[in-house]
Amino acid sequence: MDVLITGAASALGSEIAAALESDEIQVRLLDDCAARREDVEWVEGSLVDPDTAWKAVRNIDALIHTGEPPPNLPADPLKREVALLDLATRGTHVLFQAAVDAGVKRLIYGSTLEIFSAYPDTVYITELYKPLPTPEAGSMARYLGEITCREFARDFPITATALRLGKLVLAEEVAGQEPDLMWVDLRDAAEAFRGALERDAGAAANWVSRWAVYHICAPIPNPKFLIGQAGAIGYQPQRDFQEGAR
Image (cartoon, rainbow, N blue to C red; front, side):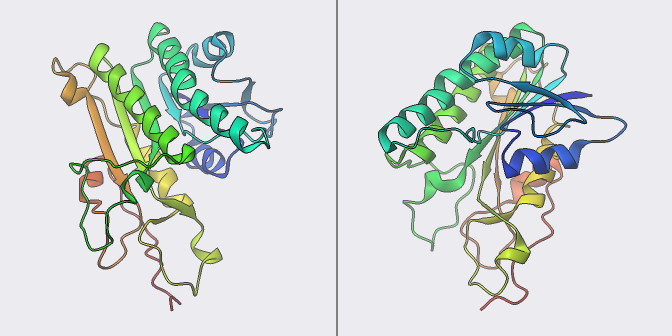
């Protein structure tokens, strides 16, 4: 299987690439910066550029759009917010449309659990809960990208999967801290993307079956986010952040 990974310069993109590389999977990496690796195919360019998108999606079987922003976002706060929203909406649409036109049948998008931050921590939240995104550009951008992904499942015979990710950390770097209900280890998140690649529902006549969304966070005791549904893609997180926690 040939897989394109966007946001390749990010920690998440790098971890997904490491999790996928094998004799059966060949990765192609895309980000808006010079190549960070010389041992794999790297496409440099912006998601909002149709030529870049077309070059990136040709001859691949599956697309993992991490949703992670490029490393060269504007420093000015307003321009940064505009860039984030443009990448999540127009960029996601340009990329997914190019993928569909190229015959790609599996699209995976990295959304965020931040869209439920307005709910109290005493609520058990499943994938059926209504998102309540705030005006904050980062989480709003991710949510708009998720909606774009969903609409492609509605319009085309493809498998579209959104992974609502918690706060990405490394267990060893937060050892001894009080666990956050939204934490997920980068390595567990990468394995969730690997599992989502196996999902194949593009032949379903009903678009609702072609679309799926899963919550991806750590198996923390007394959780806010229930992750049982993600078992459908083999998600079995290995880090619960309890060792050494205060």
